Amino acid sequence: MKKWAIVALLLVSSMLAFAGANEPAKPATAPVEPMVTSQQHDSRLEGEERFRTNCGRCHQAPHKFPPRMMATIVRHMRVRAMLTDKDMKTILAYMTE
Image (cartoon, rainbow, N blue to C red; front, top):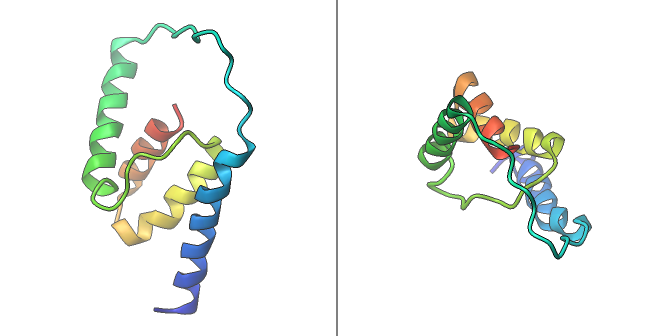
C-alpha cells in the first residue's frame, strides 16, 4: 500500500474516532422534528440508497458529523469507491441532513 493511502486511512480513521468526543450533551427533551416536503423525502431516500450501494458494502452509516468534516471524508472515499460527482453530492447531502 502506498504511503499516501495509509496516511489517508489514518486521517479518516482518526476523524471518525475523535469526532464523537466533542459532541455536546443531548437535551433531555425530545427535539421537534421539522416538516419534511415530498422533494426532501425523495432526495433523502436517493441519498440513502446511494450510500447503501456505494458505501454500505464496507461501512455502517456513521453518526452525524459537521458538514465540513463529512465533506472531507466523502471526498477521500470518492476515489476508493469510484463515485461519480453526482453520487458524491447526493451522499454528502444525505449524510449532512
